[in-house]
Length: 114
Image (cartoon, rainbow, N blue to C red; front, side, top):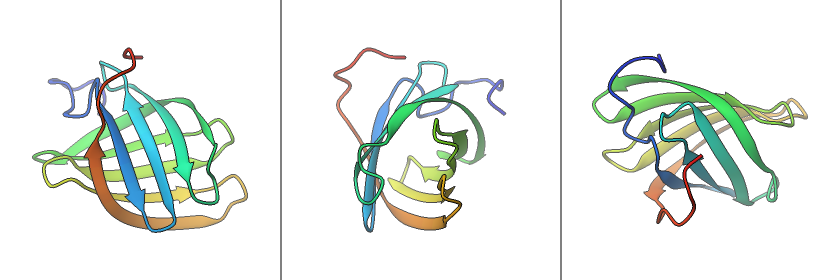
């Protein structure tokens, strides 16, 4: 749960996820409790915002991270920060359901933390 210690591996860091047909940038707050997201390609390109997130570590370097976006979309990631792989499951605001997987790459931290 997000109140557990120590901080998650993704806290204070930014990542790109690249799935077939969709890519996004996710920037996590220093405590791992907020995500700032921006979809950069695909049918939802241009969607962005910030959300409270919850997480649970399920294996070394592997986390389930969940949040609800400003348009009502719900997101569940299973991100393996050790191997650089992401699986995502999300229900878009139009209620379509998507299952995706692809690489997870850390981005340079050029912006201040949340």
